[in-house]
Image (cartoon, rainbow, N blue to C red; front, side, top):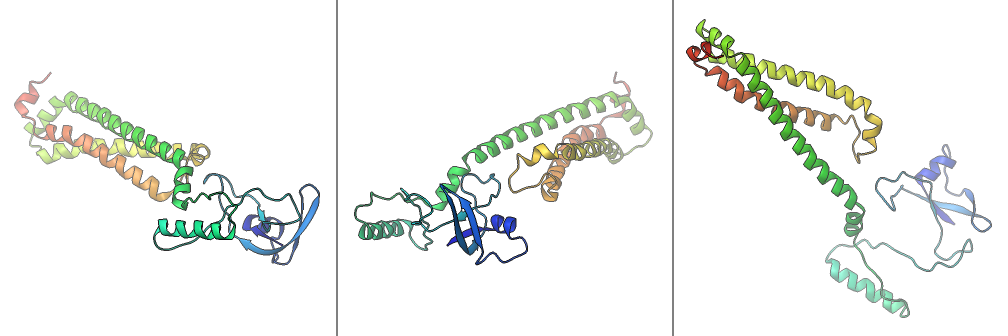
Length: 246
């Protein structure tokens, strides 16, 4: 008798109930077992590993050598230390010759398996924030230079009756255009790098609407904020000073 996972069931019994079916496998010599249950797919080494066809046999069976170790799971509620002590006492009572057992919580095991992912996430967050700061500084420099180069034009506009709100709107409109161009170029880039990006993500797709939308909104907000300071300065420029500016 044995238990199989969903991947194996879909692979060999796509249109039939696998319960009661026989499966042959080659260990030291061909063996077979009767399927008595189907369980969900699970990860054993990494959260990134693909789902593979797996089956489980009784701990003591004639299909292979006697196992040298085993692991089992205990679902509990209450104090973890008290439960661990109770489990150790039960094992000691049932098998006094067994060496002291090691007890690990599922959170500890998952934490260890996610160490690399957490490091990558932290580094990605740091460099992403650094890139955002550098982009904001660069954008501010571009907008400030753009406003400075148009100081005479701004002075003439103010002298002809343009209101500060008009100047502010004109400068911010250029900033919004830059945002639109960046988004228009960025989204196709995601599509082009879809295959590479998918290998770096866990729990997300390259075109996840929420992630892409939030990223676009953050960049748009930073861009507008970076362009607001030069725009506000331009809206308050003295027309006499502006007309004499070279």
